[in-house]
View (cartoon, rainbow, N blue to C red):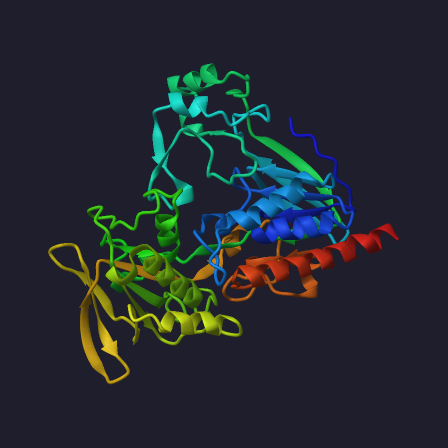
Length: 424
């Protein structure tokens, strides 16, 4: 049973990605009681699925390790994973939050020894790797998962596989009788920090994501490059496992488009520029990257990063909104369109195409457990009508990691101010 004490001076943070962790830690470190709720079995969110950050080109492990250390050292912070908010009632300073907690089937006695995983044979698509690989029915979601506690997939509960996993555990940490729990928590303020999801590339029909194996998205590309990813960090074509050395990056794939996402997601340009660096680091002069773009939005300190990529002779920039993608007999994507600098038509063949899909809120408008003021894209607006509920990070707008963290810190300050007024 989950035992959590919460009062109207508690701050609840919904979402355990980089923004949610930041907001929760900032509030807890000034002495407030905070409960952090995460729907997944682990903290880290989309950032944990990146290979490297820009512009420093460091792995997310560095930032994650710092946050995890801060979490372990703070007694004001309670973390509940596999926890989903189903309803919020009340008003500023006096909220009631109903939470559903799904069973992990593994207790905190787990030492992450991995014996359960060894004996389980059933495999499932690996969500962490955007289904590009497989995982076992007993698994730790990723190398930096927090908590480092195994999960038993509910699909094997009631089967011999689950029994084998339980028998293999030397510490009695597997409880196959775990059931769903519901909690009713009090809170004075709530920070909604459920993050973002990549735009569905299947909707961009002319680009053939749903038909051509060698057309992938920018977030999938991150997983291919990661040494802990489905290919061990090898840049391989999904169709035949061959090395991809001639890569096209299509900007604004579904963004700034009245038929898809009207807004600019602000991170896609820099993400593609960063990904050309991955290609250069892996293959050097043996590889070529081509960026098809409407315009490149790199502001402030990112301009230097852009200029550095432009100086690479193996990176080509084509100013064009790609009209369509076809496939040749070798499953090579063929891009068709017009280069607007000279009005030259092209039909360019590449090994692999990476769609720079945009960012949209991870929670659909119809699924919010409380009425909030949203814009037409579904992001939470800064409005007094929202009372003591504040958006943190990309729940409020499309931000890169740096801006998302700054926004989450501001949300924490506002939530702290609310509960401070209660205690007066």
